[in-house]
Image (cartoon, rainbow, N blue to C red):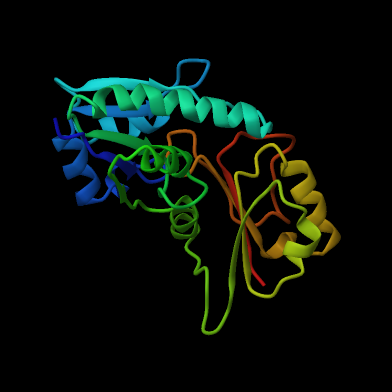
Length: 230
């Protein structure tokens, strides 16, 4: 029996209307949808996709990943998730794994893709709108100008070197590190050219168009993206 294809489908940052026509088509044709599920039971990527794709008759496979930093713990979770997906691929069923934003940018799908590729399965990536592009649109700003570089990094990186680079800086997934990020920006007098959007495209979206005038206190969730203009 021919094995099924493992699709990685970017569902964008939150607004179902930002899903691509191709993403919708692939999700409609795949009999199995695999989606990350948190300990609390939340399946955000599936909720987004369900805003535009009919799930009726489809098998939903929850995937459990860990927020642990330990590489061995992370890899074990990826192997377990790949095994759950493989059960359907071996039956000849195509599986679409949902991924917030785009499947090539800090995406869990990339780990799953590598594992299943090594095991001989066909994989296909379906790109989605990256969260930082949606954030820039929400703020009404351009990320780049002529010959200007763009730096995209996780907010957990050492920021001194990043913030000293020329051009626009995008600090993704900055929620837990937000106090340190704000402190680093303030030390460089960069709050006035820095912006923040939390939960872009979701009902709880919060926008801070100028961090020198207004800024959140404490930690504010995983989906916090900071844009620092030069």
